[in-house]
Amino acid sequence: QVQLVESGGGSVEAGGSLRLSCAASEYIHNISCMGWFRQAPGKERERVAAVYTAGGWRYYADSVTGRFTISQDIAKKMVYLQMNTLKPEDTAIYYCAAGGCPYGGIWYQSLYFRLWGQGTQVTVSS
Image (tube, rainbow, N blue to C red; front, side):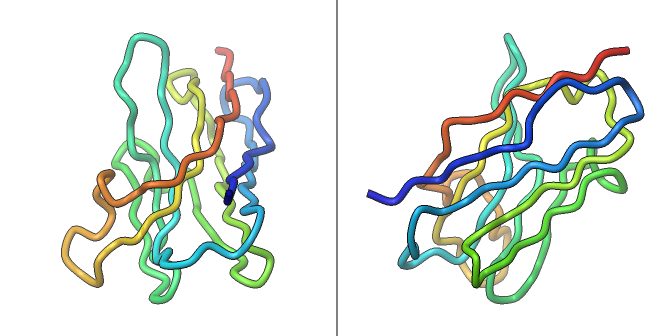
């Protein structure tokens, strides 16, 4: 069974940076998009960033635009999330996800992501 494994979480002060990594255990068939989601205590899961693997399209939530960057290394089956200028409100468990997103339209909808990692904790202190 294909697994997605996140790493790179940790604790950092506000204004700091972290880089999350997500590794797929093997080639994933019928995957056209990968993304990062997060869930803070008492809050709903939030879509943070996504990339359409073939076209390179990227999506960012308004709350992270200009601070976070999603990237991928298809050959290594990896996706990354570079997080800069972190804020306390970025504190959450971050999940890597993969799915079969459609070509075009609102391709980054959460419902298309069917494979999920176990999550990695990110804590930003003020």
